[in-house]
Length: 191
Image 1 (cartoon, rainbow, N blue to C red):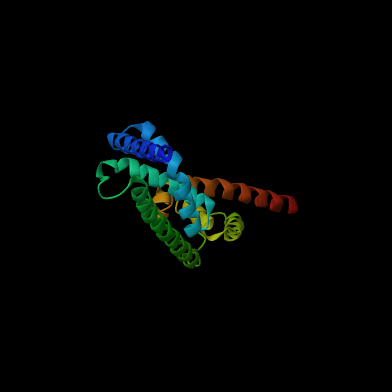
Image 2 (cartoon, rainbow, N blue to C red; image 1 turned 135 degrees about the horizontal axis):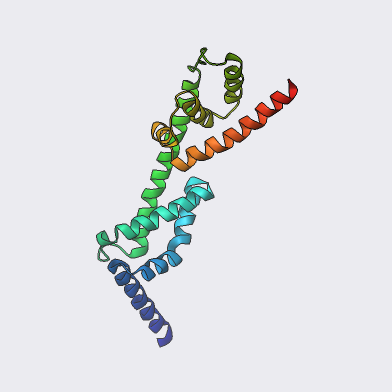
């Protein structure tokens, strides 16, 4: 009977050592905390968000927030796993809010797209063809490309204007240019 009790004490000492290392800034303790509780955070996130990629983002954000906020962790108020779960719940709520903001932005972009006109002073035929091809893009890539072509904004300016990550803007532009080039080449071959 003494063996299970000894394991319990060893587990408590192991956890206490992990907590002390974590609070002291020991990166090995962070790695151990991640190994122990990242699956729990992932499960909570994927169940709530329904998206594996968003759940993986949540894991990263949770452990970065825990690491940065480790000085605020008080083991007398909560156990480390409970504290991490609390951060996860807040991060998941933030992910839901970000999703809602993206949807609102996409709808705004769709609504705003109707107001664009083509500059008649340029080569009219080319502009019309380009405008037609831009209209075939999804709403967000379409808005990104219009800001790049018609407003002559840089990638950074587009990201700031739309509130999108810079990498997302670059990806939209790269994919859209590939699609536009393919379509325009097909139109040239047909002429």
